[in-house]
Image (cartoon, rainbow over all chains, first blue to last red; front, side, top):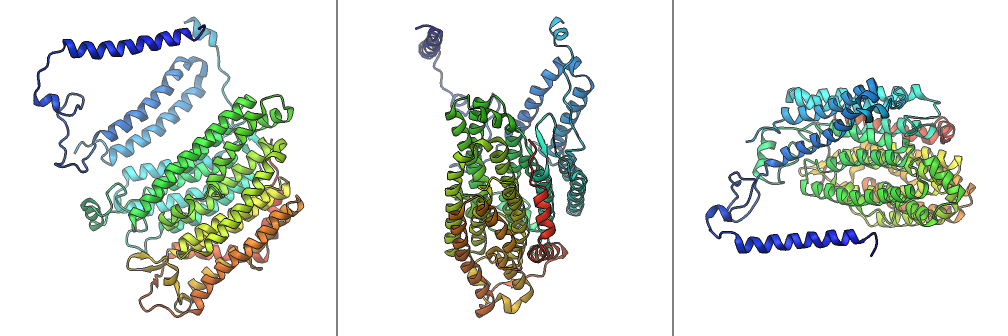
Length: 119
Length: 516
């Protein structure tokens, strides 16, 4: 019980928070059932229609999700570069432009081959 | 901003662009290939891709030749440009050139060996729609170039993280390319899935090995790990564990027993031009990385890794040869034969001498050209369902198409190590290196498994030339110039390296010194 105590306390608080939220929600929340409640949750928009009895359906978000990851990673590199721009000088600028150009080539491919069309 | 002022000027790393020009050319042309996919009209894409891909490979080869004799560490110690690197770069580029020729072939199957809709469910309406419209895809060319770039970085890496990046850059495009077959798409997708799952698993081993070695040496640099190991100050458990896990990752890529189980399934399912590419160029890159790790980072540990490698080499030769005898499918047989050949190369790896390095390099060249030619011939023997790979369908092939069957017989004789073919000089080189290092038992097993292997190579020749052709057997389709040139170069190199091996042996000998 020395340096590890805070971790145990943190775990206890996290557990207590989870239990209190779930229990309190079930006691205090209103219970009104309607069709929207039973639908699958897709970030607030109308759920994608699914074939009756299961089967394959298009997951249209995946291209967008993959593009998001690509640009997310790009940002991860852009922030430190922006902070140290003065220190890295022209070398950093050239390397970063090369990096952005490479990512942009992948983006052009997605765009030209219809990856950004919804239907 | 006081923090910025405190940072001051970060010393910019020195990057010798000229020394890594071959890789930059390959990656650059790969990116141009992606742009071609985006902007060039569909009808012109195939010819454009073939031209720029072949031109890029030739340009990279020329820049490798210009670099000949370089012996230094560049890019802040991340990449080693030395004899083995340059020899393997030249070899990988030459093999990639032949592989691209077979990939570009479109006379055998309308639209080529690659599907126009890799994402469509096999047998679905979407797939039929695409094939009825005659839509073809040419993404395989940039994918090949990215894989080649990774294969060049992998054996040249002078620190473990760069090596891991090279491993992933070469692997990821290959996983995709395995699943692109036009015919037998389920088998092809199964191969891609298996290769991906097992490849990711082995990358995990490789990465964990890197982590342990970093924990031991406090550096990713191969030379720093070597000096840490020689000072023997750190925790031996970390060093031995890291070495074992790293080696597992590398042995998986070269398909050594007991990490070979993916080889037959993936080689059989992948489109045959891709199989030829994988079986030769990936193996060259993998062995390059293996000998660099063992010789540069772990030279002081030779007495620890050598007994294990003895076992792996013996197992690989025996299991590969014995299982090849039982195969009825030509592609699976060639796959097991490539496992056995990995074992033969490992006998030179355990020598841990300059002669060992030179023989590994030379064997990779002899094996590579024969293998890529053999897989190119597999694409020619077809019936209505595509390639006819069952051995019984090859009966009597020699009577109907003596040239094709004769070339295949030559490649098989080279695999068996018959004199006057490249296989003999290659085997002679690796066994001499192993004997020099005192590995006589391994060499005896090697010679015995060569004899077992010779049995099934000769069996195929007997089937082709001395049995009656089946009445509804497959036909040999006349290919366009692409495959013909690939096979012709394969035959020529196999004969030349068998009759006058001295120039290439000499080159391998001079290229056998690692920079540290």
